[in-house]
Length: 116
Image 1 (cartoon, rainbow, N blue to C red):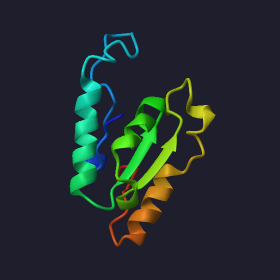
Image 2: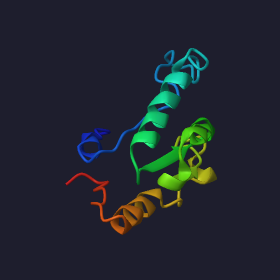
Image 3: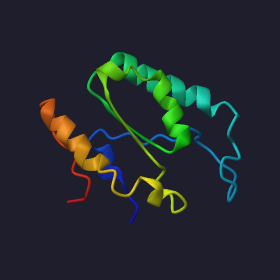
């Protein structure tokens, strides 16, 4: 159904680099200030927490890696999972299983990626 509340209930945060868009016009609100806001959110999380997992999918997301304190966190990058680029490295990247392996190594609960 596309409902990912079960992810949010487990602490997963989904965050796009740009939070709004004109209907049917990808990246139409890029450069409107969202980038600074999302950088600040990611930097705050990176600075105040340890052992977070950042899954950076797509080129815009990969740029967000610049504000992450990488020695404190686990960062994985891949192509964006959109139909246009998923076959360029997102399919088969195993980010969900890699995330859970890392969480277990840290003594944390793995994410139940599929709904119960």
